[in-house]
Image 1 (cartoon, rainbow, N blue to C red):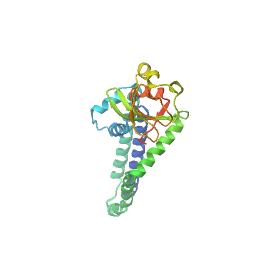
Image 2 (image 1 turned 90 degrees about the vertical axis):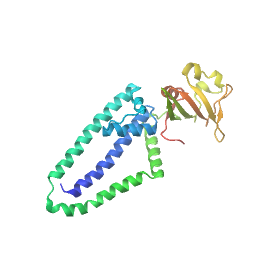
Image 3 (image 1 turned 45 degrees about the vertical axis):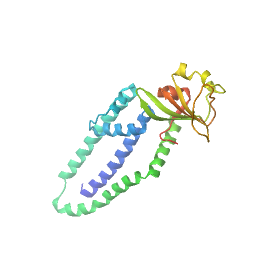
Image 4 (image 1 turned 120 degrees about the horizontal axis):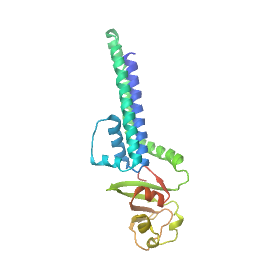
Amino acid sequence: MNIYLAFSLFALIILGYWVISELFAMLFRFTGLPDDKARFQVISLLTGCGFTTHESELLLTTRSRRRLARITMLFGYVFNITIVSAFINVFFSLKVSELAADLVSSIIPLLAILFIVAFMRVPKVRAWGDRLIEKLAGRIVHKDIANTIWLMDYIGQETIAQVTLNEVPEAFQNKPLSESGLKPDYGILVMLVEPKGGKAEPASAHTVFRPGDKLTVFGDYATISRAFHARERFSEQ
């Protein structure tokens, strides 16, 4: 294998690494991990760099995340070993006489890598990719759920999330917040309500949910999703 083929392979590996990291980040987002934290922790797990922050404790809070973290680490280890082995094989198969010509020809795959990286950093392209992932994930995982939830941040073991009510769940229809049972039955605190086309206002005991409302709520992420029949979305709308 010459350098040209090696760098072409390297370009494909970079692209594959990006796709893999996005896939695992998406899986972690399904468990309720915020987007930015999911991406950072996935890169740390795949590369095996051992970078530890307080955020990494979020991976240990649920059984599904611990299992997914183990899979990510093992996959990253095998993937990295395969890459190193391939490039060692390339290095020992090189011929000095072909080195100069191969170095020149390797410019093409290097430029391809730079183009891919620059292209994916364009905000509109990144937003399009997130929308595509969300659309596909929504069809596959939550076909029958109309409402959406966006995880904004963690506070301890609880979350702050925004729920968009495309449809008001039957249990909360035409009921004031004080009679909804969200706080005593689900442990969910509704902090803000933003009507469709209106301004966000603090929720009160007399608040009645309407289709199109955006609710800023505090509580357990899985419980919030279940109570409002909401599916994950990956970015602020």
